[in-house]
Structure formats: structure tokens, C-alpha cells
Amino acid sequence: MFQIILLRMVMMRITLRQLQIFIAIAQSGSTTAAGEIIALSQSAISASIAELEKALNVQLFDRVGKRLLLNDHGRAMLPQAMALVNGATSLENSFNEIAPSILIIGASLTIGNYLLPTILANYWRAQGIVLGELMPPLQVVVANTADIVSKVVNFEVDIGLIEGPCNRADISVSPWLEDELLLVVAPNHPVLQENGEFISPDLLTKANWLLRERGSGTREALEQALLPHIAQLKSSLEFNDHEAIKQSAVQGLGIACLSRTVVRDMLDAGKLVELKTPFGKLVRRFSLLVHHQKQVTPGMQHFMNHIFKNQKDT
Image 1 (cartoon, rainbow, N blue to C red):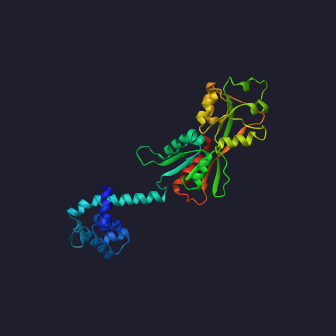
Image 2: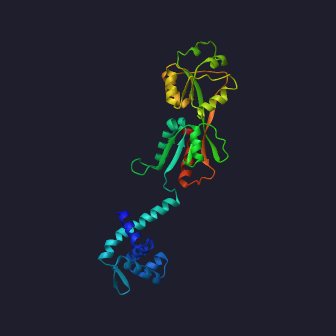
Image 3: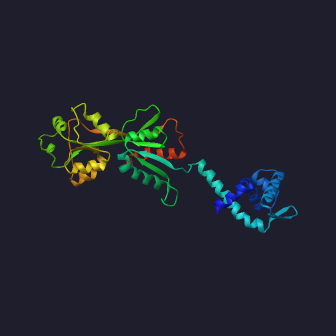
């Protein structure tokens, strides 16, 4: 009904200002009193009502002396006019505060599959949003780090969340969260048969690795950490999915390098074992990306504030 009324308003050139004046007169009973309410002269009030009645081709008031009293047409129109004006006021107020928007968030695979669901649940819960009752609050694109960077560059996503580095001059990069990468194998993997506290670089060089595809933030972090210490990462299997790597490691097919968040369940179940190496802890930073030329809307800023405010709880 609201859309039908609005369409008719456009077709008949009825303005919200005319409806505000109509409501003010209906509630106050005279053009003089209405003028005081909405700060217009009596002549402007009278002219506006005359234009409204002409557009509708009906009289809305009975003229009784200096008083204007709603007639049957006016009484029928009043609740519809109030609904339209109230709706327009709510729309204006929402954009003056935090505007309703549909954000497009790009997330690399570890973040998109394992962290973002919790982030979104907390974000919507904090705003009192019940999913299914409103339009989708945002859209999510999950891809590897290189693809997410490309989408930020091309304005295909509003915000990028990545697990690898980004050195582009046209992208603003904000460090967000620290993530620990683990080297894991099945409990019966031959690399565990060596005695000693640490797995030697020689064994790591000879072993088969289960690697992410090139362009992955996880793979780039692994290569930066290990290649200065070992000759190569031999791999007969490459994947574009963390779950496939994790399950392949469980089956003893090779060494995997994955986020602690990804493998926590298998470590707890005893199906994977963390390798200790002499290279120290493998740590990387998750980052939030926004194009330098991107107009940061209130909706974007609100989401980014939530990300940084709640990073310890992620």
C-alpha cells in the first residue's frame, strides 16, 4: 500500500511538504496555527493546501469561519499522509545516523570459513538484527588472498579481510588479528619417527607437503618462514581448500601447514599431531583492506569498528 500511494504521489506531483502542511492544519485547525508549527507564512500555507486539493481534485476541509475542519475526504487521507511523512522521516533519520546498506565483504578462505561466521553472528546480535526479517545486511565473497585483493582493487567488494600480505599502493591495509600457523601430520607419519625434540630441516626437505595453491596467504606465509631454512617444499598435491588439506593430512598423505583455528578439532581428537621445528613459532597477521578511493560509508565504518573492537573475542 505504501508503494502504491508513493507512486500515485509521484504521478500527481504531490509533495511531502504539502502532506506535512496538510497534517499540521488537520491537527491545529487553522492555517495560522499550522504556520507557527512548521515556520511558514499563512499565505504559503493556504497556497500549498490549494495546490494539494487541486492535484487531488477534492476538498479536504470544511471552511468554518477561520477554522479548517477535516471533511470525509480529509479524514480518509490523514492516516495515509501521516504514514508517508513518518516513513520519510524515519528514512532520513536512519541515513543521518547509521545508514541501512548492503555491504559486500571479501574474505580469504581461513577467515571466510572459520572466523567470519562468528564475527557476523556477533555483529548482527549487537545490532539486534534478526535474520529473515530484513533484507540481507551484507553479502560475502570467499576466495584466496590474491583474488580478494583483486576484488578490492576493482571495487567488487567494499572491505577485504585477508590472511596474507598486501603491498599495493592503492589499498589501505590495517593489521587486524594475529594468527598462528601449525605444521601438522597424522600420528603415524614417518617424519615423527625421528628422535629428538625438533623435526630436522633435512626431514622437512624430503617429506611430501600438502600445499595451498599459489596466491594463497597461507602458502605465502609458509614459504616466507621456511624457505630461508630448507631447500624446497616438495609437493605432489596442491589444494584450494583448507578442509581438503586437513583431511589429506589425517590420512597420512603429507605435512600440512594450517591455521590453529582450522586444525584445532583434529588436534583435540588426536587425529593430527603438531610438529615442532627449530624455526620457532609461525605467526602471521590478518589484515583489513579498503581501497584508498573508496567512499567509506557509515555502514562500512560501523562494521570495521566492530571488527577492531572485538578482535580479541574472534
